[in-house]
Image (tube, rainbow, N blue to C red; front, side, top):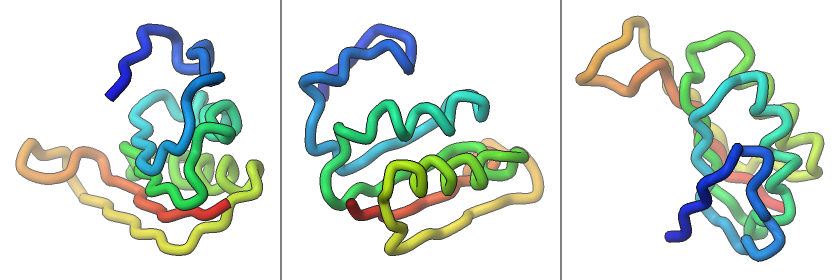
Length: 100
């Protein structure tokens, strides 16, 4: 595991390769930019998980970002909940397996 202390869209991605698990838990407004920013880092097959799928725009932005970089979704699962709960996934998840 490598940790980068920087703004999401300012990390040096030049040496990041073959990421096969991408977990996004950040502002919806950055989501459509994050996937293209990191597109060269993803492995051919990449599990992408997006937090807060209950919130407006998260699933749409994730799909648009994936489409924009030319990846295909092989599998997706939308896990939503009705209430915020410490005993449940928080604000939903959108889970995808994507391929280059």
